[in-house]
Image (cartoon, rainbow over all chains, first blue to last red):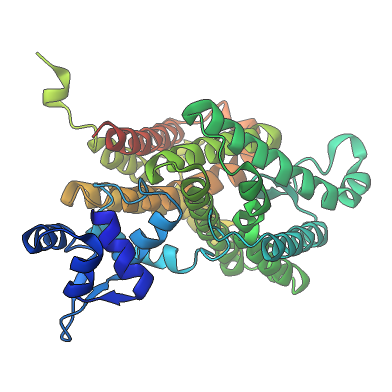
Length: 270
Length: 136
């Protein structure tokens, strides 16, 4: 019943009580009871009509994508409206990360663009990609630095594929989720979007020789940390949308992969 | 006697963060604290000098995250994201420091071990927050 109410209001942008009663075919008292239960998602404005608030719109979109588990009881309005999550949701490319209204052509074109740009930037910066980390490790292995540098675009694409396979594998292993594998794969490049920004900024610092300045060096590191967190959030959100996994479970996968990759990077560096 | 009656595992974050903050003022290599090394490298205008402040920055951010969840349990995802950022500083520090100081790591002093313990505690804090959420 509550899902129906959210859907009626969401489909029409707003709804009057009369329309709700006509559509739901239940008693006035029952409708009032459910409207009161949905008070965190719905608001009645001065024109006496019912509208979805920010959380309600999000719940409506989630229902469209069949991810009713996304808004859990614990994932409260207060937390959703906190500056951090509100900010992260604002910069998440939600339009392209959706299970139902998936535009294959648009997503494939943008994804190819992101991968090509990433491969070029990785080559220009001479940074070896390892999941969401970029460093000059591996480059001096056995005096093959020039060969490895020339192959960096290829390594970037391989990194994309391996990263996807590990995340997809963990989802299947831990949560037995096989849904939307192709959609998830096609839009997986959006996770790398923040890292392209980092690579572009790093290249700018590199060509201007400003990385030798202490303050620029620290800015470079801080930007990397913040953009990695943004990328992890996009990854978490994508997992929730495509695999119907709760945000907290998606975060566990992100955490394991990210810190697992870090351990690997540290071992390689040594 | 049940241990969980006396222990609040949400304190892992505060303890871990405090360890990281403390490690800044404890000896790491040859009796030098990270603060000493920071001041020394800053005076020599070496580009990675600020890196030696990362453990304390990491500790402060993680303590803030831990306090946030103690203040209001609803802010769990926020706490995890704040801890991601905090731990990110520590990981970048290790990532830059370990290859550079690797020969000296075997002779590392108490500060190094405090920082590692702090990082591990924060990692467990994040896992604890996410898993306890699922249990509910």
